[in-house]
Structures are given as C-alpha cells and as structure tokens.
Length: 160
Image (cartoon, one colour):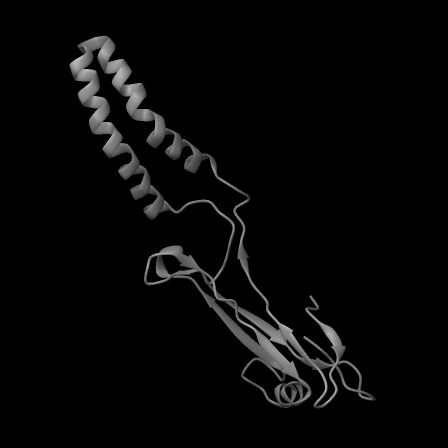
C-alpha cells in the first residue's frame, strides 16, 4: 500500500505521515450486549420472580443484592474477556485511568529520506519499523514496517 508519494526537494519540502493500526470488532458482540442487559435488568427480573414465589420482602432483598452483584460481575467479565470495540492499537490508560492514544509520526524530509534509503535497519534498506503496543490487558502488539524508496533517479520523488 502506498501511504504517500510525492517530491521532496532539499530544504523546501517535507511530509508528515501518521500511520495507525486499528482493531476492528465491527461494533458490539452478542456477549457484551447480553452481559450489559443482564447487569441493567437482571436484578428487577429476578427480584420480581422471587416476589412471586416468596413474597415482597424476599424479592426486594434479592433485587437489592443483585443490583450490586450483577454490574460488578459484568465488569469483571469485561475485564477478563474484553469488550468488543473498534480502537487504534497502542491504546493505553493515563495516570487518571482514562484511555488515550498517541499516534506515531514519521517526518520525512529529503535528507531523512536519503539517509533512510542508504541504511539497513535489519529489514532492508529504507525500512523503518514502528511498534504499536497496547497496555497488557488489551494484548495488542504489532510492528508496522514502512519502506522509504526513491521512485525516480532523475529527480527527487520518494514514496513511503
């Protein structure tokens, strides 16, 4: 796949390339929807059923206990099994527990392109590895390899 193709003129032009890798779950999976529905509605359903068989005191007590237990169980299962969602690989939590993603960027100038093409980082001349690593609970760890190459010897076009 060509991410960018254009002319880099020494001391005049540059390109900024920001590639990302995404996990695509295609929306919510059936289990996540079921788990959320049980967490929200399970206490009322079970409480009503217990009321029918054992009376209002037993039904209210059961419902009150389940209002605490079911959301906690749902959260636990989400932490263990994961939640379906689309997101960029490399997502982490900051110190406040808020999810964040800081994309990686490649600044490409004529000099950088020439230097990258001339050197071999272990995967071939002009190949630049970019690592995308999630926090451990998300399990994502990928390396994206970008190759910088000259596409014309007569001028300075470079592609990535």
